Length: 219
Image 1 (cartoon, rainbow, N blue to C red):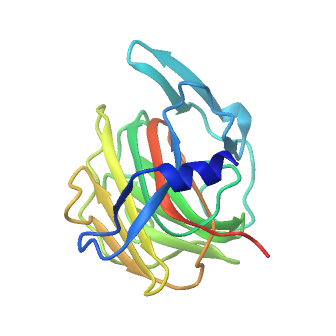
Image 2 (cartoon, helix red, strand yellow):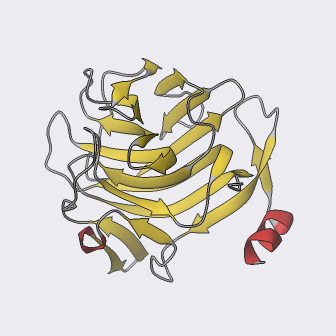
Image 3 (cartoon, rainbow, N blue to C red):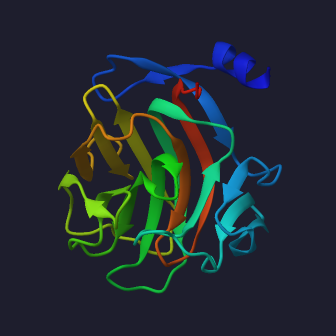
């Protein structure tokens, strides 16, 4: 009932730069009430951290799990929410060791541990870093058609946005600059799934997560 009321009463925002479609707010969390709405791959690797500016969701150590294929294993998914078209927004603070593959990730289209997309935002770009990937019953495969030389993680908070349009398969990734995407991909393999946050093999804080989208209900 709460979710239904939220969808009806929430504000709408434009879908993409053109504003051709509007999506309702279906999830928002600032972690002031904890992280009960999240499903971590390893609960022991995540905790709520209290600060003078509010609470944050912190992946503070590597998850002690194994994935069926080469892909990130440090993640936490939003519980009880699957979406088709969506816009994801969050604030992220990397706390990993500085280096070429210092990263933070966002997961989407997640159906199970062997089927999902993720964006890997790292300081330096190569075929394994700073790209959009698909995991489809095999090791991760790069699908991004545009990226940058790297995502400049430092010890400051940064704003992340992901825009997904399943009709034409569009995936757009934004980092601080909300007008120009840092990565683009087109893929129609997964048209629904969960969304989540984490990293490949680093650590970090998350805050102010919002998901605008169309809910998907399994039949």
